[in-house]
Image (cartoon, rainbow, N blue to C red; front, side, top):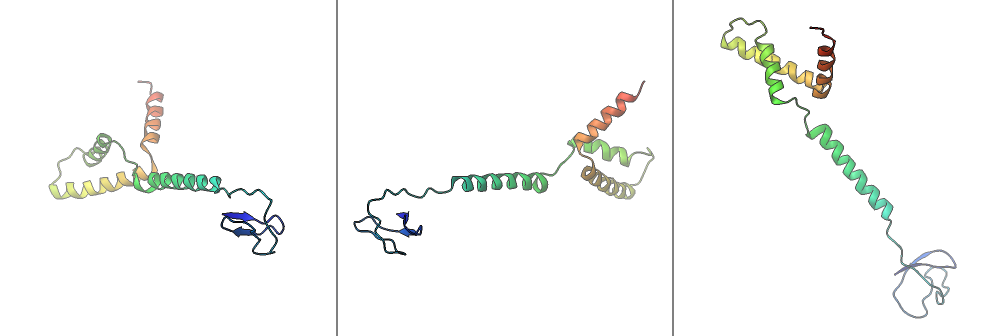
Length: 129
């Protein structure tokens, strides 16, 4: 059991028994009521909260990659490749596909799908046809 001496305020670790004295000032501790130290609940709860928030943030920023829906990605890449609607050989198509995928990856880093939908709604709402 850990107790604090009422005379000198020093912490003591003792076993139950009679005639217990303070290890620092050597005065008796008999006749006083003692309570056990409570573990700090606030610091434990704080550590759990910080850990949970940190895990959520790391997961959100580094593990979950913000992607467009597959159909949207396909449409964007296809329209990039076939914008000219001209025939192209397979080598040029492969190179152009790499360029379009790279452009889409950079765009996804700058513009989230949520923002893209907002801008599209704003543009289509302003058209009068």
